[in-house]
Image 1 (cartoon, helix red, strand yellow):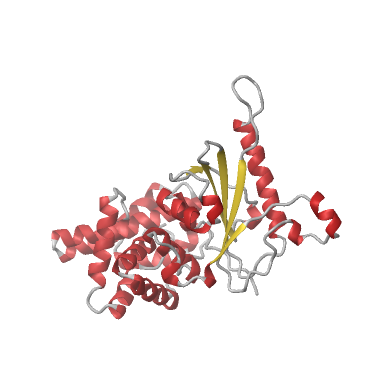
Image 2: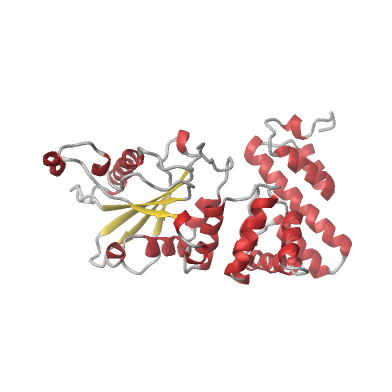
Length: 343
């Protein structure tokens, strides 16, 4: 079965694990109980950077966290989210490579005390989160993946890693923490593309079964993602699942963005339009949001934009912006989005 790569430049799962509450819940709930019992009850500290090669970044997300034991010793916790449909048979070997990089990185930055003496290496624990469709049949240790006579096993390099297979966990039991629960729900069922009605309907129904708060959090995530589904498609499906409540759910999600100080164009534009109570102002608010979202996507892909392009995007109406946004999905050059000479 072919792999299921993430959408290009998709930061969703990185952002999820960048939240201390979500990261703390994942480690607390999914690491072995004997490991959790040794750790302090504090949110883990995120260590910046990735240890995955460019070739595999389309199929994996990783995050490294720092914590400590009750005795005060440092612990590094490496979390890898595996997006392939089938378990990679050499995952233990690949994890070994990541672990070597992590410890070398630590040794370079923190391995020497102020007096010049070498510090002992920290403990390193690894957690793999798998959202594939096939059962995980790969050994959970390096030695387990090695064909060796029993007498040689005590002399082999070895480590174990913990596995979370999302397909085996009911939606309601993905996490006790709402933010993580909804994030893992999206990870389990797949993040919908801009026009993916089938997957979006599945996610909205699944989130609503968990509760209205979870549904609001789902909408908060989806409309805050520049590669996510169109806002109007989201509202249409919301009205289908919860008749006449789509706008209320989206407005509640918009209020969360406002309360947290974010400037999400689509949601913010809608919230401002409703507050003014003017149909024309609401439409213009939506268009401004779409324009800023499109400009952000253009800068991420094409870097510097000519002033005339920025001015043209900001002056466009919602219909024109939707057309350009659709072209952006597959475009490799600005001329494919703005094909006329006036671009």
